[in-house]
Image (cartoon, rainbow, N blue to C red; front, side):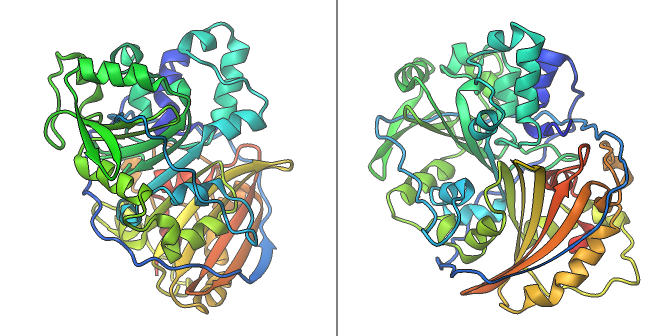
Length: 442
């Protein structure tokens, strides 16, 4: 199985007794900058397939449990996501980006569509842990359909991991159908306490509001909506208090019957509500983010990150590069600014895409052969202490085919590598979670 550690580890622990512990979390910084909004034009596409698989062994993820984040209050519904332009294919990811502040891209974005994954698998969504406990077949079908998805690292694991969560806050993890997480890190360094989430689903907003009031939350109005607030930014409630199980991730909460914003600090919630009120640009207005979202097609789960997040040798996803020796035969890649990774399923099976964005409209085409050549034989850049997960190596052992595709946009270009996965292949999100992105070095 390709079970995603950051989301389903705790669920597996409770239902399957299959998870192990997590390392100490590290803090992440709040979103700051707001990119200038731009648009993308219809892309031009080129592609070239390669690679044949070797029978690999089944990957096993050793998961990291993370702290949580949680809810806010209002009767005003969340805005409807802006659909993709008629000339572009439908993308749930791109629609969600229209709800997310552009400045959040500086801390990384995780997206997951659990509802669609369950629907594609023909699995009836459970309402509670008790529903799953009724039979092994129901439980296994749910976990198989959820396999490979990352949902709000730093939050959902805690929701599933605390049996008291619904009694305290009025909702449970099974009510969530889609999630976008901000600031969550990767395996090896647990998702930080300073992470937030936007959740969609079916919620009893009246019950949640009453629970929050009973816990001492205050109601605050901003950008025409109301959210709930308790304590200082990033403060932890007493572990003896009922809401101590949230470890500060529920300090700020916005809630409607279809959406929740949960965060440790005010800026996350107020930035989201300002974007919904059209007071600030969204990630869909950002040229790089929207271009990558289109290049990732319509994934069930995805991660979007800036070059700084990926390549920082101390704190970024690439922290394992310290022990990576760059092969002498590699050429160079032009400087890219953003990257994304997506995982999906279709009638032919599972696939993943890794895409990078260049401000230079000609750079993607120039780098296509170099990148796909690197990835075909790529083993790992992960420092030995982070190698808790085994999956087929090199990369092309996880793929029956690797295909490079380039797109020119109005303000830049994207270079994407698409993998048609073998039965036991690793997903692109594994490379991100494991910080295993040495093939993206300059």
